[in-house]
Picture 1 (cartoon, one colour):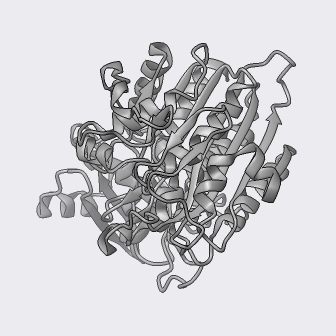
Picture 2 (spheres, rainbow, N blue to C red):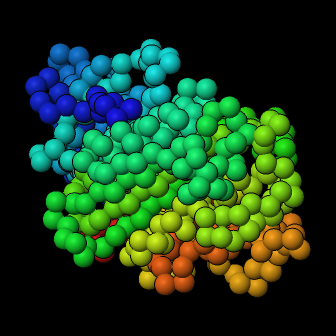
Picture 3 (tube, rainbow, N blue to C red):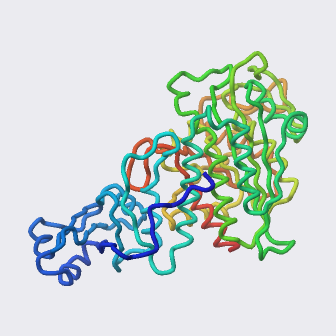
Length: 461
């Protein structure tokens, strides 16, 4: 996955056919510039340059060009339809038009993704000639997205806690980071809640941590700390999920995958910051050694937590990571997790829920998400619900005593492990596309990753 090549783009234009991406307002100008036969053909078939409208044009030697309608869609995603809709094995060069060339490259690459590790693709996709300058940032973001999708799409029997932890370590080592992997007694001592979640599985838990510094980062450069929930499969534990709810639980490590993708983008861009990454890698299973409802766990911070529901394990995986991250006094702490179904009920599958204790960062990420077409939506850390986490035998429960506001209550639980003077962003995301749309194939998805990168880059890049 680290070495997967973006093979849908080429640098040489020899043999490439022209591809005209056009908006309705610019269609008359394009028709005037095309050969009379091609322009007449487009007029006769009623081409309107609507979003996703594709017409192949013939010439003396056969297929000569293509015209692709963008409509008023300003996102990169319409270009994601092209790798599969253009003829197999053909190469195309985008002609100048009213669109951003780098965004077009990103959209094309996002649409070309396929999970081929276990089933090779039966189709040779079309390829795109890179614009002048090569669009390196778009290719980096596409490669990170492909990596995140591959991680999430990998079946849980092939990607367990040990494999995910080693992958995170390999990513850090590739970029010269200082890496450590905690296991066994050391993990039980330093991350007792991670150990509690993972002890029910025969596949042991791990925590991978790495620290990286940009080549231009000084000792006082901002420290960005990232924490990811890496539950490689979630049965729900003794509070067992129904079979339908368990079906996609290989994606429950989507937060960890997103954090690793964001870290990759930051390191490849060589941002002038210091970076700390923590990934808690576990499997939530049922066994004689699994945590039970009403067990009480003492966390890294010393606080005690009563287990009101063993299926609310993600917040347990994260709380020790957050507590440790705060010990380093980061300028910004970010966690990503496929944490609650309640966030999906509130916002649907496409909008990650954003929680923050700092308005400036929250507004920055929302604005950046709109700018790079990777939206998030803020929900409140409503203090009035904090008492819902009360317990009669421990300092808190891991679930609410009421059936409301599940995403907010989960965020309030995590907030208890974040120091009051730490700027914190929490992303509760779905990490999955339920159906294929241009640029977003069905399966694992990197959500909020480009929004977070854009916000960090705007502030510190």
